[in-house]
Image 1 (tube, each protein chain N blue to C red):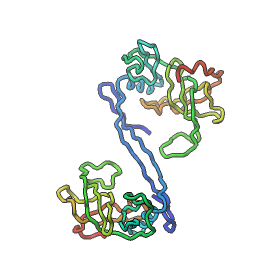
Image 2: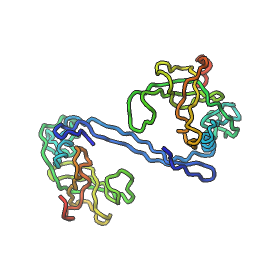
Image 3: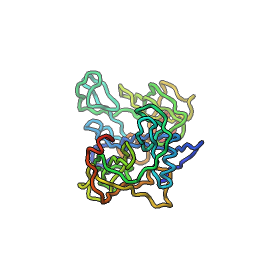
Image 4: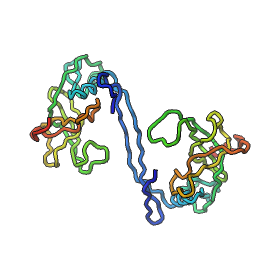
Length: 167
Length: 158
């Protein structure tokens, strides 16, 4: 709908864009998603450079080799970068405002995209320690929404130098 | 929100919808066009060279100069100048059954408007055919106020 008041000139119109895909996860990401459905975060280690990828895609983009070794990761990690989202939009299920973050899970070598809740937003910072907040056990499913968001934990910040390599 | 997840040979698959619910401001010229749709009128705009652009734009695409302040009413009927048949309409397209996307030069206009034509079947579509708008019951000042165009001989609704 446009402007509801018939007497006023139309100032704006909706121009929605909708791309309906069928996403097929592939072998490695399917194993990862099945792990998420059991409340576990699984990555894969590159046999060549030893880097641990999460979510795994089945290969190492740097070494161009297949990754098969599965690694179970902690659901704790460190914020490597963030942005505060204050602008409302349709299709956002997280209460506004929130912090959109990259989190380097303990044991992983690439950051993981999520959301931080549970603290004043001006406290969100690079190096902050966080833990995944899962949906209740009975609601776990092989989908990214099984992790609601991450919440702060009472651990000392990780110095930037220790995160630098993973950025 | 539970997506219907399917599995083939251990590989998971699910629908993934990317949706951008944009709203754009229309500017003074298109504002006239969309506001008039609420009254079931289709307005063009006259260029300094005398051509009538439908849908109207703020500048004459041929010369780049600003258009005049003359907004003549065009149509409602017009001529299909080219078209493409949609045999399997997607969700949220104007019609749920097969239709044509067509460029329609409305009577009194010098350019063509893109809209759907409800011709029933592909054999009823042809370049040069006359069509007229089928208006939606509720006007809101948007292009969807015209549900689609239909062949002029179909009779019945205005």
